[in-house]
Image (cartoon, rainbow, N blue to C red; front, side, top):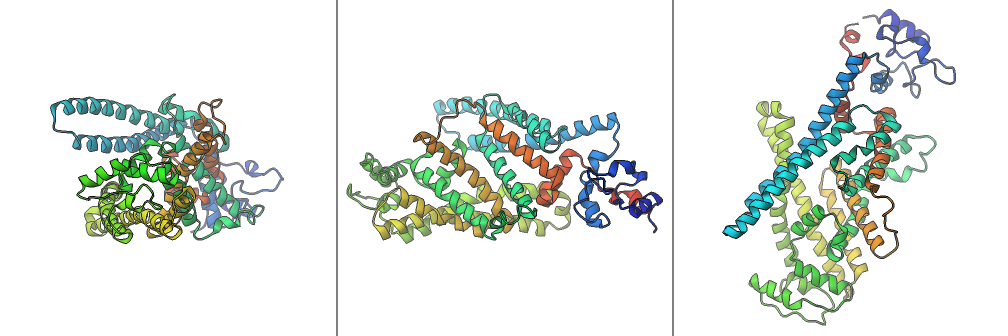
Length: 479
């Protein structure tokens, strides 16, 4: 069918058909600063192309004539959606944590009273955190746009608690913003050459190796530099008792052993009778007792896989039940099969990651016949190669998550040894970092939408209530 008259007139003078008079626009509004007529949002590409029409459609929101009541309704809707995401994520994690605590309840009466008290506290805290995170994301999504908007929206993090630090979250969001900024740089004519190294195909694996070197070294040598929840996660999947880690730490740091007897007693409880040599040069006997290095890696891998399965089952199956609930009735075997396959694959990654950490460190200790901090850092670096087991689409997500924690741990270590000043003058540095990061993200969302992956873009569009592209509206289709 022929285009509408307004659209034809717009095209004849060089306007993008997205912005026709019939759509509520004025031709005088579409003159850029240089005096050239054209679509303000499609001026970087061919206005006549359909792809250009789609690229500018995301910002149709800012140009469409909304009434005050419609604006208020959009604000309320976006806030409600943001609240539901924040409360759902935090509440789901809190519920899982509470259920885990209840399963660990001890049988004795005295222990039961203590556990009941702590469980009540945990439930109260979970409810508070759920509401706080809901308010945080609900307020953040309410009304602001672009660079300045993201900067202003950043302090909404204070709604999670005025005295609650969220350094890990802030650094992770900073990593996400850096990725978006780098993609913008790659697409830029001015900065394309500078950002060319960022297009390396296996950059995600390199980041994971770099992060693993810091995180696993901190796990063995300085656990207090890691966030408490992450430290607990590593202690569980690292599969070693605290006395073993203490023995390795003392040996790598060149300190005299203080707990060899405690390590021997620990092995006796597992049925292994061992006598440790205070003059040992490598900590293999501390790490795996009478087992050989290869035998230890195999047995550890089997146990690690069993520990990893419960971690990833809810990660894959719960979204399948929620997102694909309609398709689950039509093709249940396909959807559940993909979920189980993803669970098996991710569990394999985590178990190989943990097993290879012990394998590589034992390998280097044996070759050089010594154990020190540089050896630990070198031995944990290739552990990140296990990320290649994961799907390509998940690799960058995991590497950025780990990189954020590695940076936080590294800065904490530098601060402790005096290379970085204490951040006493900036009480909420996490809010500052988060504000700068969200400013970049919101700017990219408004101006460089192509740098987002489609799944994240769909979520942001849903939260902020971005309408469908003008060229895909029912009136446009009917014409």
